Length: 416
Image (cartoon, rainbow, N blue to C red; front, side, top):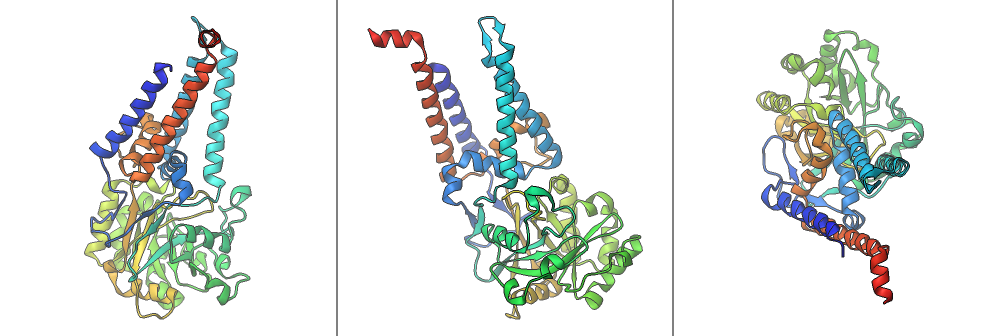
């Protein structure tokens, strides 16, 4: 058997074990530093474990901030180019036709990886072991009535498709918060149909003056133009949201982080109810740890709650964070959650967040393509690691066997 494939497989195996044993990271954590409820863990469907290298890479790439996502794509193409040229060197010459064909093949594989990762409504890693005293909630999600949920990859993402997505993600309920409209939740649906599992609750995401404010619980569409023109308009929404619209307000990232970070104390004075501190959108994942921790400290000091949301727009099958809300008096699931958000302040929620490669990680941008699997290995469970190691050695042995069968000297020796 050729030695090079064995060396590569052994090196990869050692890297996986080194990442997990020498640099371990918790698979789940609370951004505030609080302990998670006992028993809470990630559950992996069988398909995700059988094909862990593929599914883990999909999850890791989905949760990248935009600069790292670009770096991953560029780095993957660069590695493909190196592989293409290296494999096309015959003697001391490069067979450029062969190199071009190999590069085209690698780009096609990358494109299929991206398209499948975005469009396949596959089985999902989900939250499990949550004690019965908690609801598992998504406070910010969309359907295909939102202006940015369109096209052949997203166009069918209606209420029931979103419900199925949230079911696979382990949620008890989710708020449908389409951009500046509520008909994704209400149009054509009876209350009996909307009371499926998980439960769909009403809401709306308003596009205002450099800010996106999620309103939870309103059953009438809020006239955006009433609040959209200025900072005073945003403040007026905070003051009027409950009395006029029956809603609870949630400040969304990246907008509050990019445009209004200095205004957050004023927003609190005007009555904003909560802040997102985990949102998997590539632009939202740019939020720095310093800004996130400042928002957490501000919320804690002023008794405001925090949220980790999906901001799901019909693409991908990975949850970055879940929001746990204590169960209340059994007034109905949506009313129960809204009552808790209105009355419990900072204690109304607990955010459970997955480990991922952050923008501020020590890994430089150009090494993102290597850092994605490394960070996945650091938090992987035993079953995931076994799957990774099995695939590495099965592929290596098959490759070595194929190379050996195609070696003329081996064939001649066998014929003798």
